[in-house]
Image 1 (cartoon, rainbow, N blue to C red):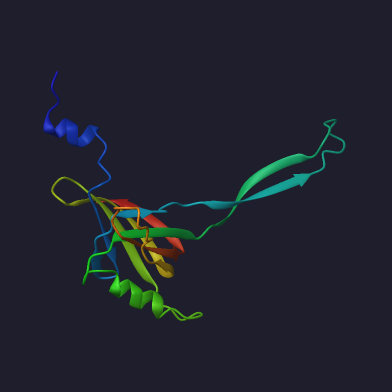
Image 2: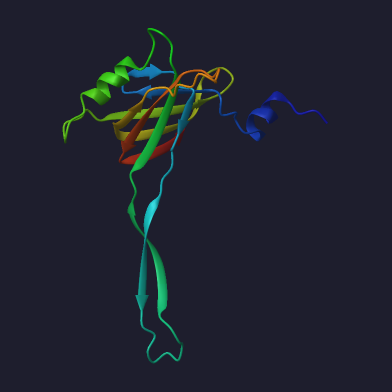
Amino acid sequence: MALSQDQIKTDYPLPVYNYRVDIGADTIAFSEVSGLELSFETITYKESQVGSGIAGPNVMLMPGTRKPLNITLKKGYVKGKSMQALYHWVNATQLNRTEKKDVTVHLCDEKGESVVRWKVINAFPVKLSAPSFNANSNEVAIESMELMASSLEMSEN
């Protein structure tokens, strides 16, 4: 039995290749975005079980503080359309003097409309890498930028 378009839209996962990235007020195309994850430090607490008749310590694991996000953005180098704005952002970074920006990654449907968005809060650049050069390769020149941020929000549109 063939599925209708409405069933396909509601039952099939969205492909990951159709997305856009907003950094502050600018929309910038990237070939890859990674690191959109929340994680926590873990705390191990051990206490004695004296008097309980059980040998060894009682071990308890619990979540600790949230770890900062580390996001990597990759982009093919195009003459005149490189990451100049991002270069100026990372180059202006100094000790405790950087402009923090919100970065929003939109997963889009076939019409290009945002379906799900991940908003990275208070991101700032920590690394900008030029392409790797290799005379034996015919790959595209890829620049990458790493950002660190304090939190991540996810919402469906």
